Length: 376
Ligand SMILES: Cc1cc2nc3c(=O)[nH]c(=O)nc-3n(C[C@H](O)[C@H](O)[C@H](O)COP(=O)(O)OP(=O)(O)OC[C@H]3O[C@@H](n4cnc5c(N)ncnc54)[C@H](O)[C@@H]3O)c2cc1C
View (cartoon, rainbow, N blue to C red):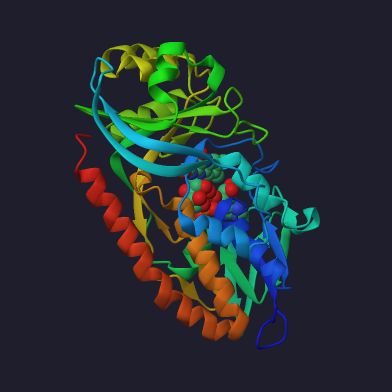
């Protein structure tokens, strides 16, 4: 594979989740000097739940050099919609593959050397003087020829790239999520839920669920996990009160597994029994550590500035209904890797903005349209 058109630069990636890892793995494979700086203290193994795989994710895994089979999927054969009693009121054939976030992360993480993935290193204070891009990573002041901002919805790199870009806005509803071993799902509910993607929509509620591989990547029956997702209307005042009750800052918009107060979980289980079909109420009751994500909207006004660029959620946060958050991050990384194969950094940055900003804007708008069709 070819390197840069100019002398090989040092590439720093802020954020070591899916977007940062896609970029780092591809650029490492192209022979570049890449280091990932991740804010979390221990890295992100064994985190996350499920995601629906788009073709772009598999194309990007191939370019990143992740072996086929390292990121296994479970295939659904149809989609069904339930009524509140649990009867099937709609059915269509639709084959799709679902992945688990942890196996996707592991596959990508294994594609770059441990020495190139530095945890407990938040990137802050990005600056560019006399053409030299510098930033703080943890305690160290670093320089790079290119800084990839893959540091998520509340990106620090974005403060440098788009200082006038504002912050994501809350869409007025949130998602509760859970991931349980499939053998915890009671038999009758398993008969309804397995082998298919299942939906329910009611006033103020929208739920869906599907199987994903087991924690060690097993896809055989009995070894998989069931991923459920429950969208609920939640005012920003209620979200902020929940954050405070959970010991988080009032402006936070998410709770990781283990952060949901027990009384909130009890209330969630009770609400599911009244507001959702019995199979969904069953799987929600079996989840000991439900976690929450406020639904956000954001598109940066620009994606590049002086040797820095934004990728994945740092560039645009798209609503989960699109099932395209990971695919968009993969597409951003693919575009960057292709541009850097044949261009100087400066030329690649100019083209990256032109190519990826319209894609981000279009997916974000699509997500808002999908959200508006739901009674949330
Ligand atoms: C732990 C975790 C679990 C997830 N689980 C799911 C899931 O089950 N299903 C799903 O569809 N989506 C999930 N997501 C979201 C999904 O990964 C993203 O929406 C999408 O893949 C785009 O990824 P991203 O890398 O751009 O952003 P993100 O996945 O949000 O990653 C941003 C990363 O940047 C790090 N970071 C933040 N600030 C800094 C900083 N200043 N310096 C350095 N690092 C920083 C964060 O710790 C994080 O690792 C999860 C995200 C995380 C972080």
